[in-house]
Structures are given as structure tokens and as C-alpha cells.
Amino acid sequence: MDWVGLLISIVINTIIISPALWLSGRALVGKEKAKFTDAIWIALLGTFVGVAVGTFFSGLVAAVIMFIIWLALIKHFFDCGWIMSFGIALVAVIIFVVVAVILALIGFAVIGLWL
Image (cartoon, rainbow, N blue to C red; front, side):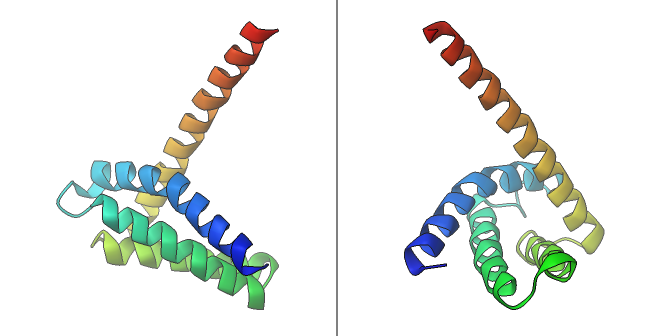
């Protein structure tokens, strides 16, 4: 991956992942521990480290390593335990999927109006 592609990937992933992490963190650990800037750092570092891990490992090994790293980042920045960090990650995925489905339905509706 070239540097421009890496930079674009980090920026886009940070923009997409941060709000879901922030909302799930606020819901599970409270607004005192789950700051939006922390969610940005988690997404930024997780994406960057993910690219680095993907360079050296592949397949299931890379997935397990990245899963542990993401949980560790959530645990560190949101000041919670391992189980709570797993819960935050799970809720963030659910939030992301719900938002993606809603946006897709809106997109289909807009396209349907034009046709």
C-alpha cells in the first residue's frame, strides 16, 4: 500500500468508526470516560496498527491479533475492563450496521425517486 492510500484509509476509517465507538462508549461507560477525542484516537491507532499487523501477518492470526489490539485500545482510552471493551466493540458494530442500513435505504429511496 502506498502512503497516499494509507493516509486516505486512516482518515476514512477514523471518520466512519469514531462516532459508533463514541456512542457505544457513552452508552456503556458514561460520558466521563468516553470522550469523542478518545474514540478518534482508538480509530486512528487501530487503523494504523491494523495496516502494520497486516503487513507481517495474514489470515486468522492477523484477525486475532487485531481483535486483541482493538480491545486493548478501547480498554485503555475508555478506562474499562476487557469484558466492557468487548461490549463496547460489539455495540459499536451494531450501531455501525444500523446506520449503514438506514443510509442504504435512504440511498435506494433517492435513486428510486429519480428513476
